[in-house]
Length: 309
Length: 87
Image (tube, rainbow over all chains, first blue to last red; front, top):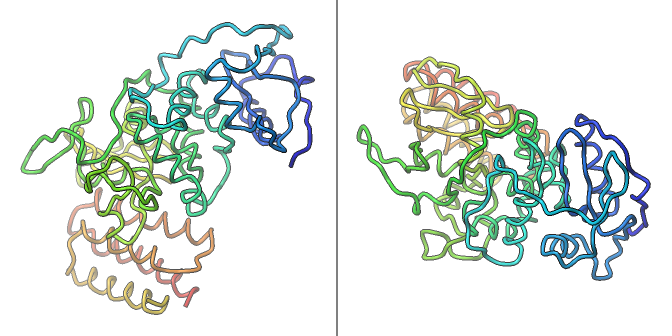
């Protein structure tokens, strides 16, 4: 740690299949911000300079990201297959990337939202976001060790409203991170902006004698919504949605004795449903297997539960 | 609650399931609670238990009611083998 690394020598034509490995290298190569990652057949990396130092002199990982996202950093250089180019053109948000509709939250939540809009990777923003924040979505990180470490960050992002699964699970690591990489490979459905919040906050619909949350055009069981909650929120000292607050708590999870949430946003669920074929089950339900995420639907198309692998 | 106590609870749960004495939707939560009460679990076993919780949930939400007890009991039996390593 702390060793200077010269990234400026990296350039040239980068095949898509190598993106994950390359980004991983940059993310862990001193922990410096890349700034923006784009992929449209080739890869473009933008950063404030060609070398990095993780020893921490005010130019740390998050500081760098915040500067880059807010336009306060130095004019970035751009490495492309055509060579060095500067300054970087403005980024047009990818319509396939779900973007938060939240009203901000704190600085970290805002940065997460901004990163969602800025990091543009065709069909796979999750990878770039994960890497911007220093986590390897392919890594087999323990959910128990990571959820505690990042509980507050996740909470902030969640509270900002409608933050995508991509961001939060990237922060959480573990099995959900693997799901991200799977999603990145299959692409997104060009999805909308589905609110990701607690059961308490969703509008309710009663059907066949059971109460469901209505998220977008689809009904979700309470069990499914509980499963979708961010993992690790129970560690937050803040009051939960059922305690008058907006983040933290989750007493129903606490009472269960375990960390019930699986950190799955409705956007990701819709992605899996839309990109996979439902396999009929013995009882009439359907399983949509998205690799890292399985979604079980009722015959009516209601979400019964979600499971991360 | 010691790990031995947790193991005993798991065995009771399995016996109850086999006897048809627990609602399907209660099984997952009860089993998952026990997995979190077990202490000192290694990462590979933690993943195994996570997968078993998913297996139970899959049974509950995809199998016919009459076929669920035996299938869930089978998963719980596998979980017992893991729990026993930490007693």
